[in-house]
Every structure is written in C-alpha cells, then in structure tokens.
Image (cartoon, rainbow, N blue to C red; front, top):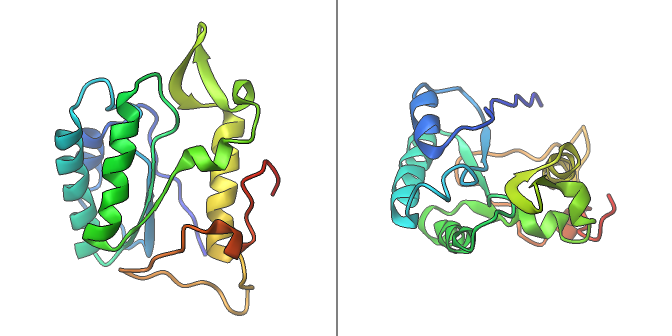
Amino acid sequence: ATVVNQGISGHTIANSLTFWTNNSQADGMFIMLGANDVNTLEVDVYLQKLRALIEQQINFGCAIFILTPPIANSGKIESFKRALMNLTNIYGVSVYDTGDYIRNYEQANVNQWTGSVVDGHLTTLGYTVISTLVASLLIGGRNALDPYKVTNGTQIPIDIGLYGATTNGTI
C-alpha cells in the first residue's frame, strides 16, 4: 500500500474543505482536525464543516477514519471529541481517541508545550506513536499476502488490541 501524508501544519477544517475538493482516488483517509479549530469555532460549526468533508470523501468512494484532536489547552476539546464519537453512528466510520494512544507516555515527551501549557499539538514522538498505532490497525493480524483492504464503509474495531497494538507505551 502507498501512504501519502497530505496533512498541512496549521490547517483548520475550513482550510481542509478548500484543499480536498478533488477526488484523490484514495482508498482511505485518516482525518485528524480540530486542534487549530478548538479556540475559534463552536462545536456545531466544526461538526458541520467536518461532516461536509466526510460526505465529500465518502461520495468519492473513500473509507474514512477519524482521529480525535490531540490533548489541547481547552476544556472545549472534550466536547469536540464527544461530537466526533457520534459520527460513528451517523456515517459508520471509525473514530479513534488519540489520547488513548499516548496516555501511558510521559506527557512532557509527547505533548508540545508553550511555556508551561500544553498547546494542543504533539511532539514528533507523539505523532510517531499515533501513526505507528494507526498503521498497526491496518496491518495487524494480516500479512503481505493477505492485506487488510479498506473500502467505503470499512470500520476497524476500537479494540486495537485485536490488531496487535497496545496502548501501554509499547509497540
């Protein structure tokens, strides 16, 4: 499989809606948006824009996987996360709480800090942990001769232990 990271640092949901207007022909798309929106958008506006992006990609035939925004310096991030979890029921997409992936790591090593405050973004290690665990969701329990195929509507169980991933700080 070919993986292409087309994430752009600093992008908001509005930027992403503008950026992803063409069909990328992707089999699957992992979306992790919200850290740059949490302090400027209300949850309902964020969700309206995210739903538009999801619907557009589903119409292109792309499987969608949602990653919650990393821990942020705002209590509002929890309302964003709860709203994202509800998308599972609406669209049949998988939603993963990135906080589960980094919970057992020393937070000073995985969270980016501005002064003495977590600024809502992760360090290189934090993003590496998340991307490694996400990759294990797709390949765990399978092999190169029997790859895990994703199509529109594919769901991967939230119990990532079934796919060889752990959340205790080891991979």
